Image 1 (cartoon, rainbow, N blue to C red):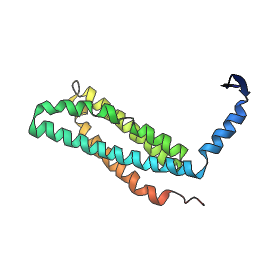
Image 2 (cartoon, rainbow, N blue to C red):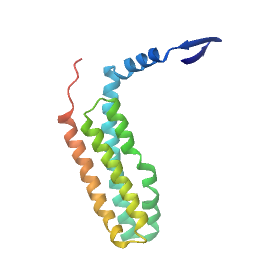
Image 3 (tube, helix red, strand yellow):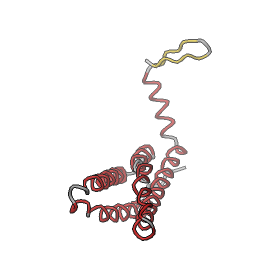
Image 4 (cartoon, rainbow, N blue to C red):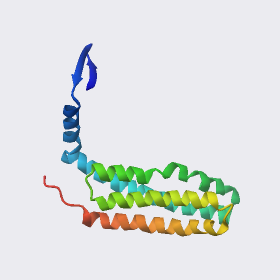
Length: 156
């Protein structure tokens, strides 16, 4: 039972009615399109974050080593974007393929953190860090380019 207090009146709602209301809200055409647009926006923001990361690496290597801290701190703000993509794809009723691909992106981001952390102990694993970054970028581009043709048209 869901308990709601409205104007000093106690209202008990069965969970099934609450679920029905949520299903109506989540399945409305406007909300589905908002989630699909959100998925595309999150994907493009993630691509831009990867580009910024490459740029910060270049600044640290070729301009000033003090810029390395920017490269270290920036991913802490952008690593959750693939999780947002998963949520947007699920509620936007996008094909499961895109949900799985977003999960793969999140796993790749975790692999990036792992190679960055372990590189002090095992140099050969740390050498995979830039390779995984390139694969991450290419996979994001693949998701964006395959998205438009894969999404079914909703009848209005």
